[in-house]
Length: 375
Image (cartoon, rainbow, N blue to C red):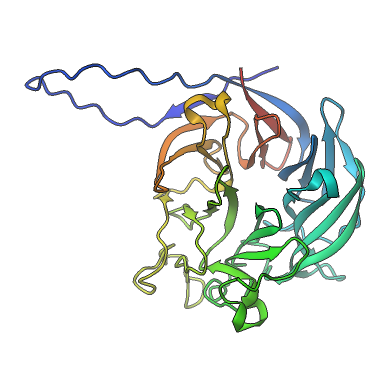
């Protein structure tokens, strides 16, 4: 069964002035593509993320189950030696990404909230895995550990490759006010490591030593999305706001993005506090009030998308839709549409190897992975 999504279009107002001669008609814009949404897998519980090893889809549930699916075959559970997970609030099995050369090396990566043997929260960690078959994987290495976890709130943790061997990691501030501005903390940051776990000496704070060596930029609340614009090295980041101002940011090296809810954890502070940090990077887009709880992000790429080719797609949890943004040559964002799928909270969006848009839901019960494709 297919479900045609509804579209909420954001159009500029038209001004008509009778005293001005009518301008020559302009060519009509191409019609928006028509879509169907079909279920890929249903009956899940909070499938946080999805990635592909060639044509093999991998997706994980927050509670710690990893699945694979090839074509129309049923999903199969992947057996792998996961650590004990801290599954609470936003904690659990979170971001996934395949190695750019996964077809040759079988590597993929996961971000997880890890528990101590007692069951208490330990930290958030990024692990590297080797997929040995459709249903088995082995641990290769722990690439990053010590990312703060707190109570499981604001665990962030998205993964994206910007180049063949350079992995970027978006983290949350663990609801601790001092973390985002503290270069000794890995919380509230975008981190950068090589795919073998070594730290690039070109990272902006490498010479400071310690955790600062991992930091690419800082001053974030809770990074929920990272997306690489196809054909470029432009990286975009999506971040949860407080009661206002979810943000979409352009990722810049070494910069401060201005979140500092101190003293204490004062969420009345501005998401980008330019009074305290005059050189803080301002968001390219803000939700205003109320927030829509922006989450995962991806770029639509290919002629099948018509006018939406090259647009940034951003998942909404509270908004229960997918926002689409036109990106200009100067990296200005213009919101042009919202796809409303009637599936509730959307956690992740990814363009699959077949060119369709895949999204996961995050309702807690009867969640799924869905495919949105051009008719």
